[in-house]
Length: 217
Image (tube, rainbow, N blue to C red):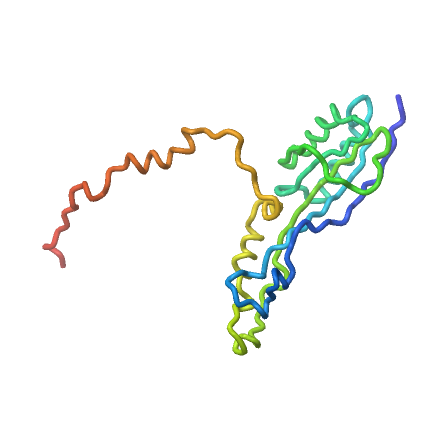
């Protein structure tokens, strides 16, 4: 039996995907005569990487146990993205093995992996957990000193709406990349609401409801 080499897990610092500072398109929080909000969400992604050894086209049980413990230490869960960097072409059975461990946390292994620092050792695969977050920096802004000097939008404008949007969005990356529409659409499902609206009998065609005007106390 070939010896199993142990690979140390690596943590990678996150990369800012997109964002806005307090100065946008020539506007700032204290010089904004428009109705455009300069308080915009900033999305940040952190990639955590963990190298595991492969054996016989799959991942041995000892390595899967290490991977499971690493997932638990990250509190892996909803919103995280798990992918595999397989430079050596071992991802056939190994991908299925990693997928079973990720499935315990309610996640699927995504296609493609982000670029990470360092080389993947021969005979190993790199598991990448990508975690994104969104927030609006500098909010709330209660500095109203310059409002009386000139006509300008409040520096706090947009903080509440965009902060709530950043907190509630399921995938913060959608603030940067958006979501592509489905390649195919089920016509029966997409037109159901319109069909119900069209077939609904207008309320004006129905009889008026009789209301008793006597006998009250």
